[in-house]
Image (cartoon, rainbow, N blue to C red; front, side):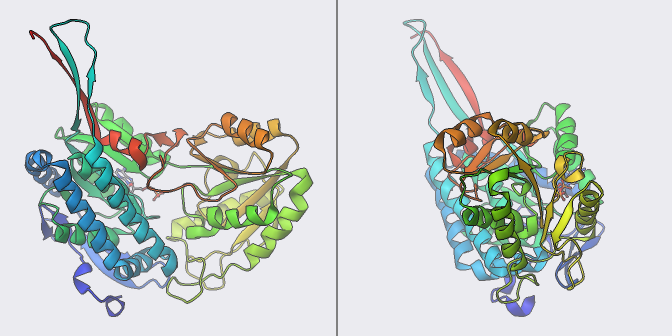
Length: 488
Ligand code: ADP
């Protein structure tokens, strides 16, 4: 990728601790590959407990100075960071596409989205107001302060390698926390490039640290981040399984946790929906990032009266999806992230077919080879199937029909997850009732997108704890302190 990048100093292959680029103590490294071509992109340090502890210590030393700075001072640094991201958008998108595989224009969009979190929290950080509460006594005053949580840790996934970094770093730093962040092993290069720009923007040494490790190292790094008493909070985005493990590990030290975990979104199309609009929504909620997003429409529920028209429109759109490597002009969908990702999608499709599903298009690995998979529509989504219970994380649109509103609600709620649901239709009463009854943290009505820096992103049930983005997102990184001032 070196030839595609204009500012080569953004290509970092060392971890970032205390403002320095560093390797592992024993020099060990692991490879990062382009999932579209298999090309080796870089070899990045394999951190263990010792190196991670050192990063935590750097954050501990940096904390008092960062906390003492004024909000406007921190805000200025975050703004400069956002501006630097925007002025390097093409280079960052190149790194992102190379290590993650999504089409370059989509990567560009994600990079700009990652800058938006910095802008947003640069502003919100200036509005961390306390309270004065009317007192029970004439000689006492009740005050409420908001203070930064302190040293915090973040662990992020590979599907949004830029946005997931700033969605944690922006509020953490705006609140006055010092952060140790572990990006996913598949996509550390985007995180390191962002850290380089953060450094240039004036983020002081130790305030933002990026620790890297392979899949094998992740448990060790995780044990240090959750076991080290200096760390006061963990914010994790990833699978429910790993989230559960990390939450358990955080229990010993009673650390705060924020968890953005798996989803299993229902996508409900009522009879009075606009089928073309719903299909565009599916494109965004299903084929974007090759279906590898936690908000992906995993269970498409279509009312009987619109089923045929909707399915036809969906088939047409699905067959038109252009698949290829991320740098190919006009491509809409890239490869899956890796072999295990591909295996899971194949397993889900085979299981759907075993349980009576009919593949209407796709259903197999793509002719391009590697980890490419065909955009797929399966009719007949059994509630016994794997795809009903867990997210497929691939480009498989699985459909099931329903009769009544009550049935749609019951089906949508038949999941351990509760991240998002999509509703299509124009009967306001029906949409309102359904939106109230569905158990998720987010509802999208007549749109396939919910994410935005202004809005509270997050789930209920086993989809997580806490919210990211929005004015609420800052609270996750703040503690309340109540002060009773007596003797006046
Ligand atoms: P995904 O299915 O998206 O790969 P994971 O939950 O496996 O989701 O990974 C999300 C992040 O969690 C990655 O950064 C990964 O390295 C990290 N991770 C995986 N297992 C552990 C673990 N046992 N402890 C700490 N981090 C982990």
